[in-house]
Image 1 (cartoon, rainbow, N blue to C red):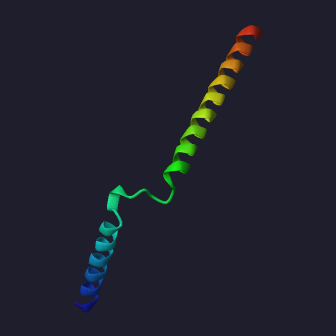
Image 2: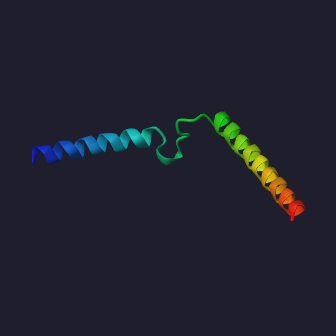
Length: 64
């Protein structure tokens, strides 16, 4: 019975700390500026992949 009470108390303390830190609305571990940079890099990577795919399709069509 003591063990269950201890677990519940630790859970309540954890929940209070979680809520005090912002809960779901927290920024996370990655700062916003880095997150934006990563999103831009992903967009550039996707553009490069699309261009390479288009180039390969053009080469395939010329070869036929």
